[in-house]
Image (cartoon, rainbow, N blue to C red; front, side, top):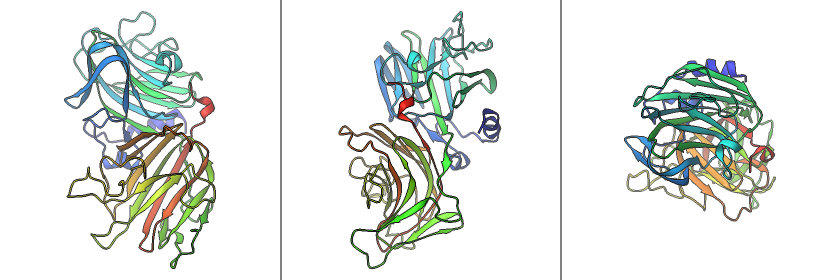
Length: 386
């Protein structure tokens, strides 16, 4: 998909309130990188004292530094609102590495009108934007459309820069603080681009069944219904023939139950052994929580990394399709459910970095699930700045 088509799609997206997504945005695969309340999914680099206030990420004290997203992305549409004082000096880092200087390992999108060579809207040391002037103490919005070597920047809805550059294809996002220059960021949302479908919605081409080691009394029945991969009974597994090590995966899932006291149990496996039953990491599917409190997930909860990190909030309900996004890059893994960040974990053992299939789980004889709109993008490690 070219930049022009991405712009056309973006023009038809209805914007939600800050730090929230509309149902249409969720359906289109948008994700919140900032939940509006915490710094979950972000790591401070340097001596800046980052905090959340009034639904915004704020930096106004400490030494200069940057706030780095824990997850990495390659092709995307990014939207972020920012606010500075008069003559404010800040920036947004794109596709930067964890180590090193982020404006050198990736790109720095300038927020500083008075820079002589690369003022606001420019990619520092790469390309100069057309002249613009920021109003102080007013929220402005950047939109970044990055697809391969093509990068397009819009400020408050107007194009200020379009360039082709091959320096960095994947990396972290970063928010910059320069000492004594207060800056605020909010409504940081992203839509991954470049994802390819793994299911044609007609049959199970590209997938293969993996049987349980012990033959079940009721083997799972896999098929395609109304464009979705449907499964009942189990245990068992259906896995993709394509293998992935670092990747972004998005899919819609519905856990079907006629009993409000029974919540189907399933999962999405990745980086396992091809043909291996329930191997590798598992992104849990279970929409159950305790005491009416969605922050108390049962059995790690939907979006939790089974056995390692529980979902911090159970977002979806049974009998309703929800969108799950899984990002795995190196040792780091994160999950969003309906665009909300629910898990963020790094495997210090790093034993599971090998490529493996995407696996869909049939858990037990009560299994009844639908999987649709399954799409993924491989993130090539060779292109990552280290």
